[in-house]
Image (cartoon, one colour):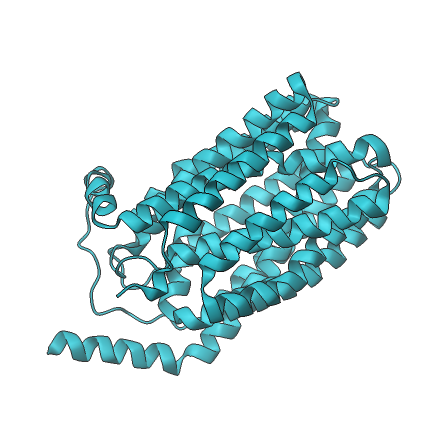
Length: 421
């Protein structure tokens, strides 16, 4: 009986602080994503690595694989840091701060080093960024699950990404036009990434307004290796979640094409600062407005449906890229890819939160994120090899195959979690 009353008090606090927490997460996500999209967009960073490496597709794939490798190694560390704590926000501030420090070091590397030295420094910084991203992905998703009810999450993520997309698109256009110009330089890229650091830091500070409830129960503190030993049993007990995270990982392999879209398009349209700014603007603004539709659809019908639709749009956009020519046709392709990637990211992250019980949620997030980032590590590296040996078309064909297979597995073998008893 006492446990039931404790759960009721917890739910009442969540409801009481919902508006405050909703808007704090909204503001944090808007500014934080604005900065990180400048780093993670499939335009600025691949083009920057291409510039520093003297035109090596392999180095582009390797650099982004190192970031994904970092994200692969640490989700379970993040889960182990928080699952025994009634309040996880202090850990979130620490990890989030280290992420922003990594972005700052990326910016400073281009200002104080040149050529090969800058390339090596940035690859190290991308690896560090990935390590902290892996932890943050668990911590902040778990925090959102505590303070935002499931039927409000689509609205929050849709609106948050909508606002972040508007600011990201504006910053991308301004950065491409004024900071990079006709002939992009390492200094121009560095100043753009320095701006990303400032925006993400302001976003993190806004989480100070969050009121985090303390749940009635938490996991007993365990060592990392002991907790890892319990993972097989957790997967056996929830076969639907197991099939989902495996399918999500397969589809995530489709990310191998991301850094090569802009390089493929650049063969015909050129990669001036203005071109990069326009395409990045289109990519982000498409994700911006599509997020409202993805969020509303997810709240009504669940994230499983938006997951499948986003894969379909991603495949279609990649096919169109193969026959597109000219700047504006390429812009339209990036509109489709931007909308699809946002739908896929939001759906895959939120769908993970709907399986199983609250106490094991950090570990489930860690399992799904680790598996996806293993795919994210292998994908760009494999893409770089395919691009160097067989051309960009082979990269896109492999990407489409992984996306389609992942989508089929979810469609056939993963039921809608909200319909489960």
